[in-house]
Image (cartoon, rainbow, N blue to C red; front, side, top):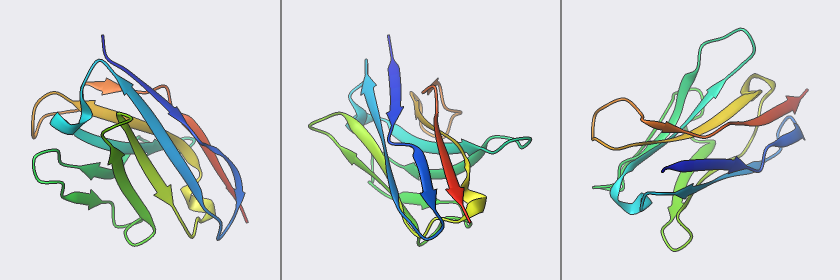
Length: 119
């Protein structure tokens, strides 16, 4: 079985930073694409960042480019999202995800962690 468990969410003031972590079991993360998504109240879930396993190349939504960084720790089998210069519009539940096949939809999701940015 594959399980993803996020941690690190919380309340932060605008301009502050948070680091989210996602512990993965059931898959060796160095062999799979990893992603972070978020869902704000009343909105659809949206893409935030992705790390391609085969190349190590990262991709970001325009809204977070230059402020967020996705990374992985193969020894700990975790993927992280460093979030800097946070804005109130970053407030959302953040989800990590893993997919078994390249260029396919994500197969496994964590339960989410709440990030609230106050103005």
